Amino acid sequence: MPKFLRIGVHQSNVSGYTSKAWCVRRVGSAIFLKWGAVEVHGAGDGRKVYWTRLPQEKTVRCGTVQRAQDYAKAAIARRRNHRYEPLAGAIANQRRTAERGAEIKQALATILIVDIVGSTAKAAKLGDARWTKVMGHYYAAVRKELKTSRGKEVVTTGDGVLATFKAPVAGITCATAIQKAVRTLGLEIRVGLHAGEYKMSGTEMVGLAFHIGTRVAAKARAGEVLVSSAVKDLMKTPSQIRFRDHGMHQLKGVPERWRLWRVEI
Image (tube, rainbow, N blue to C red):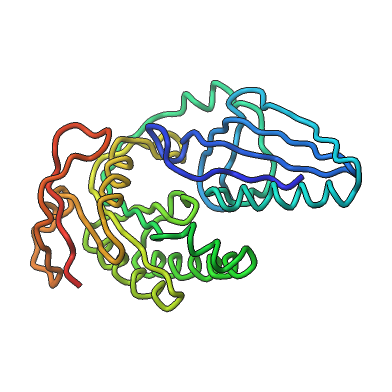
């Protein structure tokens, strides 16, 4: 059964965020659909997905095998065009309460959010096959730069990536390197960085800092790398990185106004 996961940071955490999953399966001339809210924990190959409640189910009887094949193909295409990604592995039932009570530890990190500008339009222009190939090269380029800069990938966000760094310089250096690398693929990105505390519950990261980083990235235009004042304030040692004041901004859903700075490349 092909499965698709809608990617995005929707709640008060990242690993542990709430999303939506779809399952599409064809048996002869019938289509079996299953969908519902899920929780996503972990990242990469170790990611686990859990239904938060019993999923909804629907059976569509198409009459002929060809109509069923066309229906399934269209359903899958719609998922891919609406910020869903193919999901490997099973979707499990709700996690045990004992897992939720894992010990919580607090840490500080520089948070990097990368997002492709105009991805939906570009995907429609290229078509599924070419876009899938471009996205494969995109994620390979991003992960190569993360490895070079010793960044830790937390989660993919449909057409973007969220990662953490121990030092702000490493995060900014990685952001500019990713920007240059993906331009060779004909892609433009916007990047936001924020430094703040998050909590570790087992292998999961939770905290408002991830939301602030996402909002900073949303303020960036194509080709821009924006950082919060928290990132700039942490860079006390001399650096070749230069900043330009980007003004005070109200970040959606975040208390108070924040001063942002544009990295001058």
